[in-house]
Each structure stands twice: as C-alpha cells, then as structure tokens.
Image (cartoon, rainbow, N blue to C red):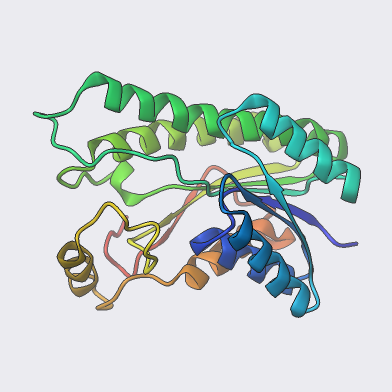
Length: 247
C-alpha cells in the first residue's frame, strides 16, 4: 500500500527535493504551491519520469478554504493523507529590534501559526480515523539560537516549535507523530533571497563542514520521519546543520 504525503511549498528547494525523495520511496505525493504553478508542474513531471506518482495542488496555506480544498482533493484522489510535510515559507522581514515595528513581528507570528494550525487541523481527523499519521514541520535553529536581524523569523518559528510539541503530546495515543526538522542555511536561492551574497558565503564558510546544507540532505531526514521506522519518535527536533549547532 502506497502512503500519501502532502508537502506544502513543494514547487522548489527543500519541498521539491522532499517530493522527489518520498516518491522514490513509494509515496504518492501532493506538490502544494501558492503561485509557482509552472515549477510545481516541473516537480510533478520529474516524479512521473522517475516512475512515481504526484499531483500539483494550488493552495495558500494561510487561507482556510484553500487548505480544506487541498486536503479534500487529496482524499478524493488517493483516499487519505498519511504524511504532512509543512515546508511552506511564510515571508518575513530582516530587521533589528531597534527598527522593528509590531506589525512586522505580529504579522509573521500570526501567519506562521495560522498556517501550521490550518494544515494540521485539516489532516489530523483522517489520520485519527486510521490511528496513523506523520506530521513534519520545517523550522530553523534561529528559533533557539538568535542571529542578528532574524528576530521575526526566529520568534515565529519558536512559537511554531512549541505548538508542534503540544500536538505531539496530544496525538501520540492515536499513533500520530509530530516532529520538527531544522536545517542550517540551505544552498537554495529562493530561501536565501533576503540575504546578501557575502552573508551566504560567510554562513557556508563558518559551518564545521565548510558548506551550506543541500536540499536533498534535508529531504532525506524528512523521509525518515515520514517512514514507519520513526513510529516511536515524536516531539523532537532533528538538526541538519553540519555541526553548526550541537545540543
């Protein structure tokens, strides 16, 4: 029986790599996108060319109706949702606290938690009905280790991290796991659009492994948490950072 995975923000970067890795492992994958229809179709085509099954579904993960429609379409097509990978990037501002306005922080907090809440609420009932599910959320080390200018992203992700732990606690008796994956800066131009080229180079140079993490490396870590082998792992954060931060 092929499992079904919904991957938000899957038209490029980590999401696209995750779609391809999961498809290679036999998952049927939903490539969610908000505005990059052409890129999402390219991911679906790549999965299909490799013998996998994928479909692209447009949805803004901060809009309740969009999220509900995406999950309904998935269940209508493939009967269920076994795995949620919440990877969609919610925009944020790079700024110091001195220059920070409440609207910048409040908007990022609200939209980050709204998206995590909506996608989780949408898939959990089906998972509970079958006593099986894997919930995986992409976070950042900035939620635990501050870096100059990243107060909006780090604060919002810290709130999401705690939300995931509460979800993990409540859903554990139902055979549903909820975990976080925390990559270091990824070698992906879209994810790094707010950083200067010199900053990106410096981040790679200061990593103990001397480079940025690759999207496919993050995807393979996600794939473990999406698998049946991770059944007794829940409420944890899996670091993929080359030794940059050690707990």
